[in-house]
Length: 81
Image 1 (spheres, rainbow, N blue to C red):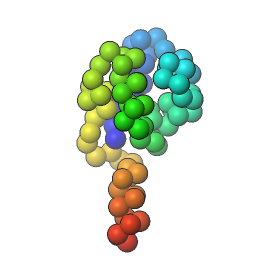
Image 2: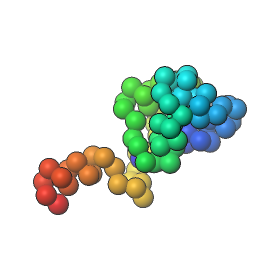
Image 3: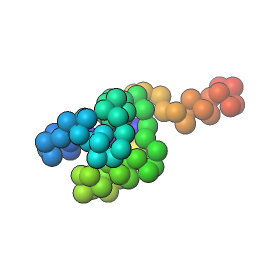
Image 4: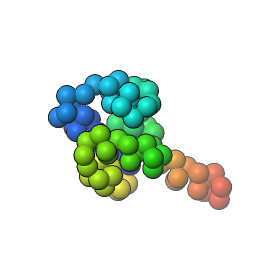
């Protein structure tokens, strides 16, 4: 899932660590979300969006990413394809 976290974070003058503190997660988790290595829970996505004063849809772009999503990996593992 693509996202605008880095763009919005930098506009707000926040580091990854500061954003992590605001949403009670680690800098590493914020980095992984920004670089599309990890998809956040709906609650974390909600908290991140609130920090930026945006809707979830304005922060997270629900279109296919170059990276495989966890859902796709799960489906493949469950159904054997």
